[in-house]
Structure formats: C-alpha cells, structure tokens
Image 1 (cartoon, rainbow, N blue to C red):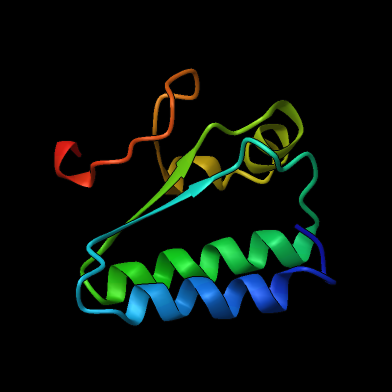
Image 2: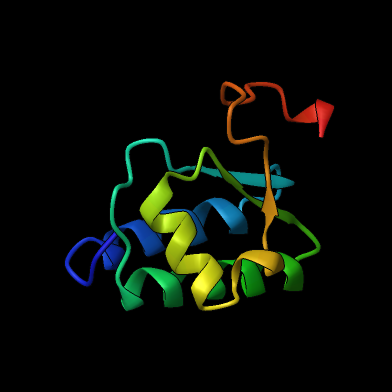
Length: 95
C-alpha cells in the first residue's frame, strides 16, 4: 500500500462503504508486505468514513511489517482486528 496504489484502492473501498448493504468492511492484509504514510492516511480515512456511516471497519491477517508500522504510530488500537491466524471470514454475520 503505497502512494502509487492507494488512490485506486481508496476509491474502491469508499464505494463499498457507501453501499447501503455493506455493514462491515474487512480488509485482508495477508498479501500486504509494506505500507507507507499514504496507506496509513487511507486507513484512517476509511475508519472515519465507516464510523460516520455507523459501519464496522476491520483489519484482517496483518503481517509483521504493516503491524509494526501501525503499532509504532500508535494507530493499531483504533482499528478492530480479526484474529490474525484465522482464515478470512466469509460470513460477516458472525462478527
């Protein structure tokens, strides 16, 4: 998640949050090895948009480097995190 990839990803995720049928947005980080400050800003913006709409925004399967960045910037505690060892949840009714 870098300055080059964030604009398109941001647009897609905000569109999903705007959808009335979306109550929970889960972002799977399993294949994300790196996040720059643009990625952090996007995550905070998505969290704010979700909360404004009364929706839940979750992070799933954070890897070591992205987790470290979120911890050192003291942002991790703001997000709901799914069990990092569990498979991605397909049925959001269990949340």
